[in-house]
Image (tube, rainbow, N blue to C red; front, side):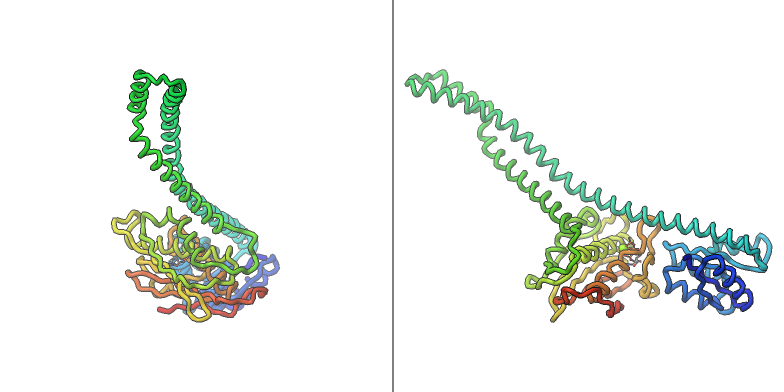
Length: 417
Ligand SMILES: Nc1ncnc2c1ncn2[C@@H]1O[C@H](COP(=O)(O)OP(=O)(O)OP(=O)(O)O)[C@@H](O)[C@H]1O
Ligand SMILES: [Mg+2]
């Protein structure tokens, strides 16, 4: 059932709207002033449709639209402004403020319903777009990984070509030696044959080959190891089917995440790690936990880009550290990015809250991370930040958890700043 907010200070209009909409299959949440309407829309991400009176005490419909425009960048809340005001100037003011549609009082029931249906179609389109954007960022990650694999594969290929040619030369030389062996058996090694061997040795440049062949083999093995590491990291990163909690090596998990995301951070930041070598294994759902650190790394990259520019001359730093703190394991992801302004501290964990432009962020990273760390593992997700200096996200997980337990939901995320 589609949920809809109705905000009108006039009791009879509010009632009429509620009855009309409920009769037509909407689940209505009513507010009698603009501030209550704003609080409801801020706290409930399931309401995407609103019919709002223009003139209300406290916060009028226009101001409500403006606030929604400012703070709900990625999540469209479709607002139909209800007003007795007439004229093009008023209509323009309403639309400029961010209202999506406009209907005159007293309203025609059929017209209101038709306008709401049109709003629902637009909301659906926006949801599809968000989905596409998510897929696009998965595509970007995949192409980053492809790029990472491409470089070692290229030099492995070059080395193998070189080895193929070198071995042809070496076989040629071996052929000449074979002739010497055959003639030596007969006791007839002639000067002519010895000089032929000398010539072949010069031609194939045996000294050069004896230096370069081992080097090509060593480099190829290095390349194979790089590819194997990336593939292993991807396997660990994307491993499904491990829904039950198991003992996980968090340091190794983070190492894999760093490898997989390398293509995204290497032009923007230096990656520093400070892992506790004594870190105990943590009982967790590792495939779910694997969503957390990548989100924090991507956020750190975006924050550094915001501060230093898309292609920064000066790289920022991302520092990931782990340590044991009593019965907890603490992971810190620190960046030297833009920091988080105080006015949005309370909102960054909200689903769909983003300050990034359309196509860059959908505001789901921290909401998912919070759900995994806090709800699923009974941990905490907090942050410390200073605008212009950077941000540190702190993930804390209890080391021992009831392996058979379901989700834990009693911990709160909070800000340490
Ligand atoms: N390290 C950080 N530095 C500065 N701001 C941050 C940082 N991490 C998160 N934020 C702020 O919190 C908002 C929400 O982050 P979140 O990861 O949930 O969504 P997103 O990054 O905008 O989009 P998505 O993760 O879905 O691609 C960001 O838009 C940004 O304003
Ligand atoms: Mg994010």
